[in-house]
Amino acid sequence: MKAIRVGRTGGPEVLEFVDVPDPVPGPGEALVRQTAIGINYIDVYVRTGLYKRPLPFIDGREGAGVVEAVGEGVTDVKPGDRVAYAATPNLGGYAEKNAVPARELVLVPDGVDDRVACALMLQGMTAHYLAYDTFPLHAGHVALVHAAAGGVGSLLVQLAKARGATVVATVGTEDKAALARGYGADHVIVYAEQDFAEATRALLGDHAVDVAYDSVGKDTWERSLSLLRSRGMLVVYGNASGPVPPVEPQKLAAGGSLFFTRPTIVDYIKTREDLLRRASDLFAAVREGKLHARIGATYPLADAAQAHRDLEARKTTGKLILVP
Image 1 (spheres, rainbow, N blue to C red):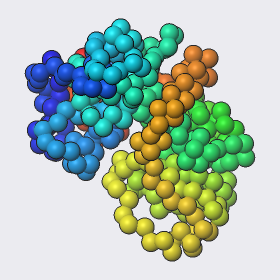
Image 2 (cartoon, rainbow, N blue to C red; image 1 turned 90 degrees about the vertical axis):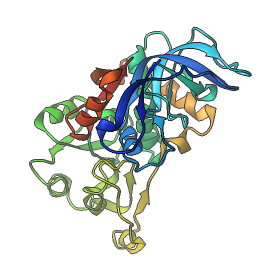
Image 3 (cartoon, one colour; image 1 turned 30 degrees about the vertical axis):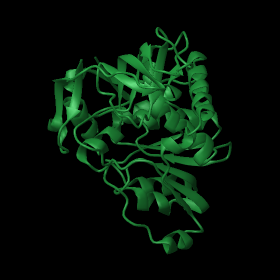
């Protein structure tokens, strides 16, 4: 089969389109013939070596497709089932086929396209746990959402509004601002034109934000923190501009007994019950027309390097999909 293999860490050029043997599902695994492969910023972190993996490896941890075969002991899925998965520790996603632990697979219901199902997995479930569990939003809360036109951000804005929160969204361009407004954001700030912290204070006053959802990291976290109310929460769930430096606990005390967390999806889908609950909520919202997962761009599998270049250059909106 064809796959994207990483033989050394580095820039997008290390993503090699190669022939590799078909994977064989082991005990507890299912072989998925993929029809859609999700691209996520975490794939960049793995490719560059920020997140360590033994070399060589096939990048990618999210996909959707059809079960071709199952290994010993698998009862949750069977050949012919449409399935999707996210955050598999096996990686192996940038390939025509992937052997995935069956406990990580969810059945895709009728009425949900494979590419949409793929878009709802890692990014959708990330948005779900951020809005429902990391900081459970409700009416009266003010949420700051960075990268609000991106894959997670666009879904998070919609879920936050459905929970009754007021949303302040930051984006990089006017075109992305229009998208964020379309997702329901109450206030949209183009950070290329004005400082988002100053703009937020001008809109809402000092320390008016209950929770800041920050996927940018190094360039934004300190200003995000400065906007929080007493006992507010900074949620850093990505490092698009680089990792956040060590944080002095006294800074949290001085800001008003603030909370600072760095969640990962693995800890929010540790049980199969949590995984199925989140997937069920997201699929139902899409089928009912209450949640829109925007496919920003699709690329042939062979063009994974270009997709990474576009993602890192912040040229993209919504979900990026590789098609085998």
